[in-house]
Amino acid sequence: MTAEESQAAAIPVLEETLRVDKTIAEPGRVFIRTSVLERTEYADLELHSGEATIARVPVDRVVDAPPAIRQEGDTIIVPVVEEIMVVEKRLLLKEEIHIRRQQVVQHIRQPVRLRSEEVSLERQSPLSSNNITPKED
Image (cartoon, rainbow, N blue to C red; front, side, top):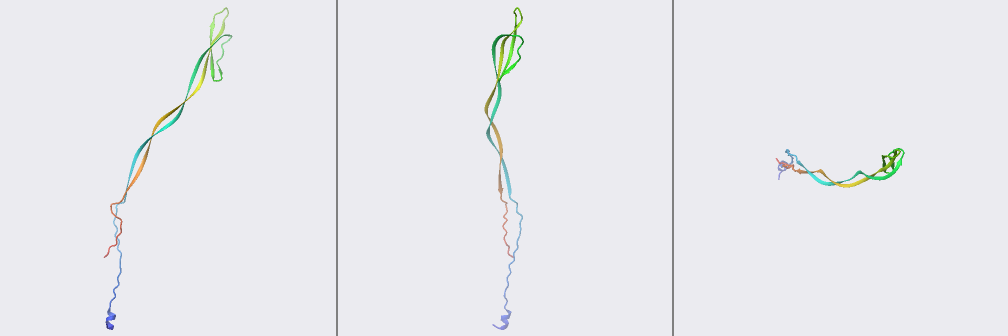
């Protein structure tokens, strides 16, 4: 090889380039479904009511004036008088009406239907791929 040939030899220099192309892809979708669930729960209630017990109590006692209505404990006493004919006029306490109040508690179990919604999400992947591939020239 001559001096001229060794100076004329070319050394190739390579260079790589990158070219990136973008495509517009449809975004993923989300489907939302709701469903109604029903369940039965029981409401525990206490219902209060009152009852009256009425008893007629014979007294048959002569009094000078009508007695007033009175209360003894949980009993209300209502006097009932009657005029009777004698040589003189007197009041005879014929009877008393005793009224006793009682508290009654009744426990009931009442079914109550309640509803609630449940939500589920389902993602759907986009139709086109988002992969980036290098292109060569």
